[in-house]
Length: 72
Ligand SMILES: [Zn+2]
Image (cartoon, rainbow, N blue to C red):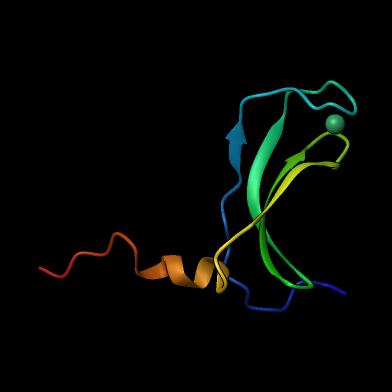
């Protein structure tokens, strides 16, 4: 199953650390939608294995679109 079209783009935040699987130091944290809702994962960009997986906001990045807007 692929990502739904029109899903909001999310940035991949670099994370300090070393991949326990392949030893690469290119870890990124970003939200993914899977069965059971949104998860915040840290994934190695070299071997693409997840090094951590945490429950995230129910609505995912949709909630973040209003953050930081100013109305003056
Ligand atoms: Zn790796």
